[in-house]
Length: 512
Image (cartoon, rainbow, N blue to C red):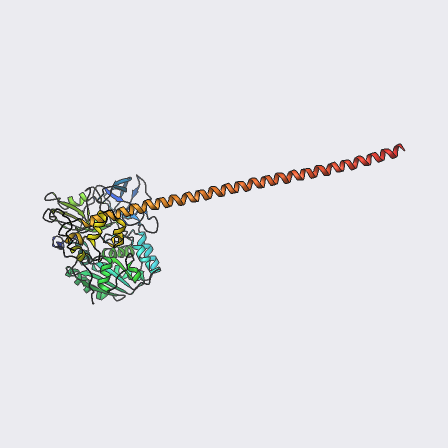
């Protein structure tokens, strides 16, 4: 298959050899599972259990809320001991709504939905099952997968791309998944094809994963229902970026701030394909995921099947702890990962790695003023001018940064990686995006307040008008009644006058 060149990109040290040969292994359950209600892009889920409830493995704990949301299920059986706020697995360390579950050790399954025959049912039924199973993009974006499956209703789709590049250094969880669960992965790819209504799929794997490539290449020969191609792409960061992967495979460039679905292509992560296969074929919700534990400061490195809600500290403990104080502890890869604010924070659906990096892996370098070398421009896969965006952000000219492409930045970190002045460019861009979001939120709040005031004023005006109309009606009715009474009294008086005249005439005749 012909591949196309993409702009920019860098070649950081892969360091995948630390965990690449370690098979996926289970870990013992912790004493407590902390299950956040926000493990996805969109609105947080709404808890439907209460403190003191006994739940079973796979039981629904929280329902999705809104069009973009995802359900949450129990990773094991046990008792709900708290529903409140707890430290989120985010660099801010701020608390988030969380369900705390104490496992009972039985690991007893709840009644789960019956298996589906994916190719005998309608695509809508598959999307409904995926939504009910709480499956999100497991490459890190955590976008609800059912929403992507429903893109067939508004886009003319023709190709599915499975992102198996796993371009971040150190991470090997997708690699092991493809090697050990090859048939399930390919079955998941076929199920997604049927759900999207496409006949063609491309599984893209970086060339540094030859065993996974060969495993899929061998097994795909038994798949005759759809045209599934296994393609090796160059080992280059950020090859796993959705839009750049599509461009490398098809030559088609996705317009700025548009979706790949707008050009007929949908992208799903390889781990997501496996989760969808488990939900459809076996009725199993997303309650665990494969996580890579690596870095020079880890006693034991490997790939582990981790229940959602497991504390990071428990996972580190099961790997023998640290051999020294880590210089940096990250969730995810070193390029786009988040620093760990607290080891008490839990593993969630979007976490694919826990890295304990030493000082040799994170050499300290002091930032210097920009020397205008344009290395960041050459490295940027989006064709942006990072040093100019950073300069405008430093000058508090956020609108100017937006004009030259801030919102098109994917925060891959390639610019900061090659910067000889070691300027934290990604932090500048993330700060600016956060500031813009905050401003938009304030503006939206003001607009919403204005709208509500206008609605209130219109309502009060309507009430006033209706009151005036009611008073006018009452006044008209009173006047009508008054006139009617006057008419009745006049008629009565006239009648009485007539009777008086008759009586006078009779008296006169009688007298005569």
